Length: 179
Image (cartoon, rainbow, N blue to C red):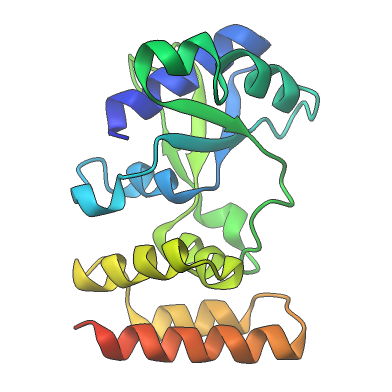
């Protein structure tokens, strides 16, 4: 997905829900901070989105422009309506959100996870595709290990899960060059 496609999803979500503020938590949140992110980070065809002011909007978004919808069939990308509990993120993440608002978002704004918060959510999710995403962030110099360590420390996790995430972070940081 590219930035203009994310802006289209924001505009469509606003049109469907009548709301003008959304949060993007999945991998395509990278487009908030890095509108021209490397292609290896843009392989997902979905944008994980929710409306913090209207929890019912999630079902409306998912049903109207979600997976297998005419929207996806037409444009080959789609919105995945999620909730605020979808991503496990570090404390203070709200203050670091990166706004996406342009002439192409139809007056709406989407707040995207900051890249280090996004990387932590991927480490916690723990799927192979998430590890590949974090490794690509390292390869492209988009994240810094000390910041990630600090953010992981401020993330509310069970001790076993925290240890697993610390191990994942260490492994990924050693596999790829970083500043």
